[in-house]
Length: 303
Image (cartoon, rainbow, N blue to C red; front, side, top):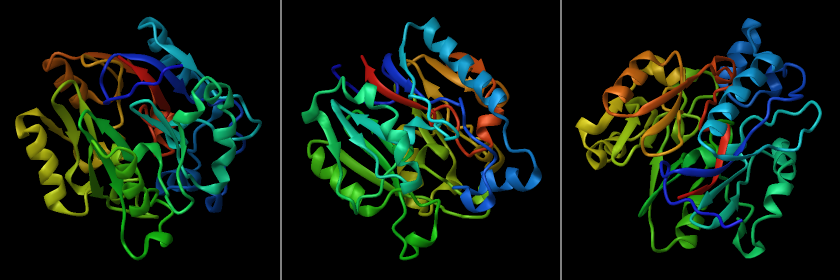
């Protein structure tokens, strides 16, 4: 397989879509990785496997409609394998293994049948000190945007997933690109004050547009840089409540086709007004784990 990912929106050809099959019992609060999951565990509203399977099947059907080749992970019994974006990501023709939370290492093993199709020389395993997850990494033509957290209390945040070492390593891997890092707001306890990944508060769409949430960024000038880069008239600014419901975490099949959650009424209306075709699916149950459409997909090949 010849990998090719230059940006977030070119026509999608091949993707890994996670699976909600055999996700196991509801985790304990100690086992949860993010404040939103903890909120739903406490409330007794944590998502049910059959509901999540239906939601992911609907996305698979959209991919089928657009002739996208879809790989799924090998199912591991009683193991959450929904968020394939976390475990690895592609930039250009390089497949980069994410250094994820140790508890999730088996998720990577479950896509070996995909990895075997890639030239070994194009598989990159970063040094151990480089922490990174795919939700924080966004190739955008000549740029690579990366969400990070560089505070001295990094180790205290289970929600801090990408560190400065990883940003430096990615810049060294792609010296011809401009790597731009953004400090994200982190909270272990309040999902409305936590940008788990960069795609929880920002995502480029189309050729020159973006979805953005100001409070997800710790440093205002970094948010302003993005606003100026895309141009205010091309940015859809989401509210704190919309960020909580993951409005920026949609997924582009092409520059003019986007898969979005059907309850994102304000966003979906704006997208259609701006010429996008919106394929609406229900993803409210999966959203309870602080992840949505971009989180559960790992693009391998785009035009």
